[in-house]
Image (cartoon, rainbow, N blue to C red; front, top):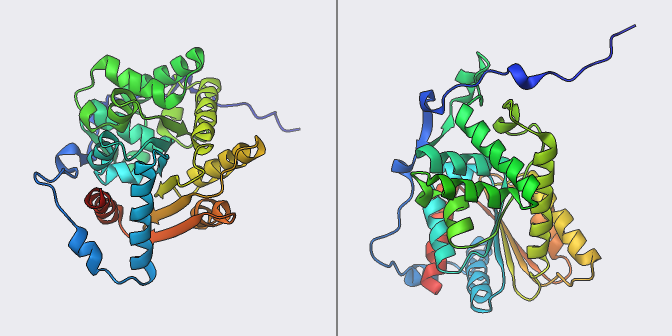
Length: 316
């Protein structure tokens, strides 16, 4: 008879100083804001009013109208967006009142937190995986798990707790952090949605599954509250999340409608390097079948998102 399977004891997991890690991404290479205002209006007017040209112009108008009518513009995003150095552009749109909420997956929160902490992120996974060192970084795991535990204890969301942690620490690169700058300094809600075991901080000895679940579940309910206000011209942008956030959005939308909120007339758009099933079906198509509009745009984030941001600012 086989012995019953027992969970691994993670208390003996070895961690390593974050300062010793070699990173691929640095704030030195992040996108910067133009010194002078750039008016793309002539360029936008020159685009063909056909296919994706038509869709792009329509999306820009929808975002501008949402901003003018004080409707939500919610940005859901995967970690690659931060690794492409686009946080300064998104923070600028927050300052201008265009973006009113964010939904992160776990990877987004980790890359953003590390950027605030050391101005760098993104390790060489293949190299560190070989000796069991991948993701085993002391400061990232300990500090983020401490914030998550506080979130669970205080009944607040993970995104808020992580942002507060960075502000209280006065992390040296907070100006590049969405969690710290957008979330706390400018008061825009940032929710974090995780699946247990998908993120490096879950490998850390301090990880508490109950706390992670509680904090992320609070954020799920907060995102649902944001979704209830989309009716009448709100906008949802999914930037590079292929699975987690499309699934979370679909459930949040279902709850909103189940509770009696009309959430039908809004715009949803998916930006990614490849169009994936869940992001297309669960963000763009199914949610907008009752009177909304849905768009898909395929291209590299480091080109498409700056173009979108500058196009919106030109319209404004």
